[in-house]
Length: 147
Image 1 (tube, rainbow, N blue to C red):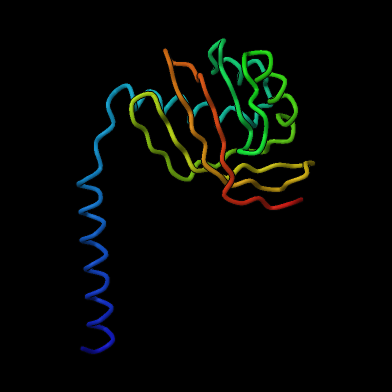
Image 2: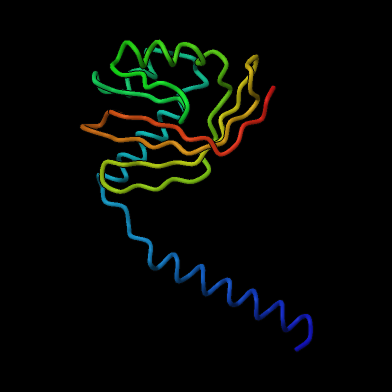
């Protein structure tokens, strides 16, 4: 087999794999679509630096863990205080991928900061949604780029 044939065969195999993967992925339910939209809107709200708007996405009994090594902020006042420590440094959240099952939404994203100890944070956010509000938000770090 020549090089062109080898590349064509490899591309064909990759295409079949992608089709099989897409066919095996379950369609999102209406609830899951709504939950994904909520989390995407939440992530898109950060550049406004509007704490009241961002807190509007949380349930009164919401909780937030900034990274796997930070203490849990539990309850509305604690979540608000934790978010207040970074909100004005957030330039944007770039959502790379999203997965949802029932009340759980998981997204991979890159968070961009200015005037902060880190320039970017890449990680996975795990959100638990109840009645259209975020109950739990836990972030797990893949990598960080210092400022």
